[in-house]
Length: 255
Ligand SMILES: [Mg+2]
Image (cartoon, rainbow, N blue to C red):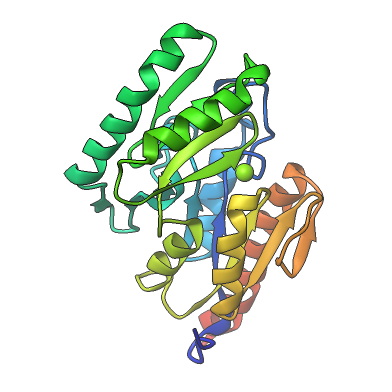
């Protein structure tokens, strides 16, 4: 896709991943620690950026709402299978998709019954099979999940850290970023996406394709043009970008 010629580089839209980017990873997804000032910091950044801030995550939207309460941000959840727009309206998975995930879950039940240390996590448009408590079962999980998606229309398998996830093909974080960028208050702005994992690569590509920048947290191969060291630096960057946006606005306000 062509560079968005109408994008205004002085007007930023910031998109971030959640786990490993806004919060440090923990032993289990439930154990993450949220910085006490995170909600407040995001709120300030949103005010500085005329609300052009969204989270794009593998988690369900409800998880992020709980962690960042009382904020209800624009969020693409479960890799973009669900999306809450800036106006509050929701794009949810259709019934057909939910039925396919039911079928995937049903075919995994025998394996999980035999190995209670495995965990199935249902998300709005995906299903994750966690084997953190039983790493020796990784291959058995992979085989079972491949068999489980066999009869579905179009699922693929996403490999994560101690987790395998069945996700509809054609859904990724890059598509979610593009969807936001077609809407207010993001349209016409220059997108920045910050993330730490392989599933963030699609969003780096989309941001850069639209004339913006991908920022990769930590090590690992990436197409992102920039890197950042850690979660604390991401927090500082959010505040810094808000300051820049405010500085640019100041001259206009004196007119
Ligand atoms: Mg992450």
